[in-house]
Length: 336
Image (cartoon, rainbow, N blue to C red; front, side):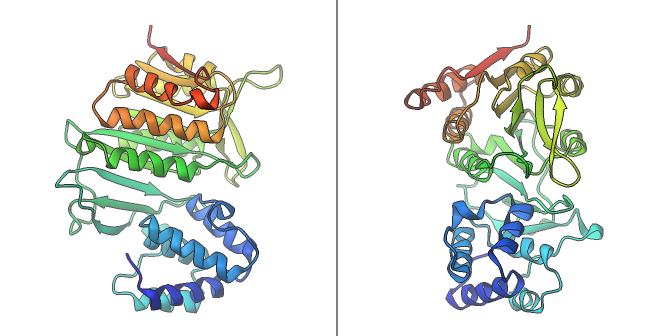
């Protein structure tokens, strides 16, 4: 969806009506989209912030996603509802009865390729809001992946009681890396946010991925806590999933998964355990900065998208961290 000037003004007024304070707007974009409002538009002038938010959504091709998120968060607002109805193809509001419905954004011209992207936003009750971008806009669902297509499952978790991460930017950069790559027709990117323990297993079952990319927070083992990764509990707070549980889950998918990338601080021990059954696992031996983590991911998928193998992609990604002084933080572990 691309809005003209008048529609942008109407959308701005609708958002101001539905979210009359910066706090309410911040909650909407965080809970529904896993976006960080301060990173998109700083300051205190709410009208200017909303305008910048709309411009950001337009530039990312996520205007339908933003409108759907706003209606999910405040479904009873008449100004927002009237604006959606004024558009020729208003997005659907996700409800428990229509949770699996897709919002189609139409066709993407990738030179006749079959590159697919699916991005799931966050909601307060963790309902799915799936956006499909693929080559057949007339179809209500994305086409089935061919045998030669590999699925990359991007799992993001940034519980509200942990430090904020630029997970939306990381996913966007990975998406761009694959879209511009020579082998883009060979990959499907599935993006899921606000991961809870039950979501983790369900996404593995639903999407049958070959590459798993986790972005979030890790925890090294201490006297009080085991090593693990932080997912979210039912109210969005941190829930530590132990290394043993992660390894036991991945073991069951060993025949299909080729690589697991844990783009999280203190994830080396978790990677070692998972690598007992998975061919390639990447973990971080120590804390890694947000910028370095994003650069590592971007470089890694640049190489994967060009047809290079995982060891080469890992080496290339590490080489791009030299100026950060973090080139020795990632470690590639191989199945024994």
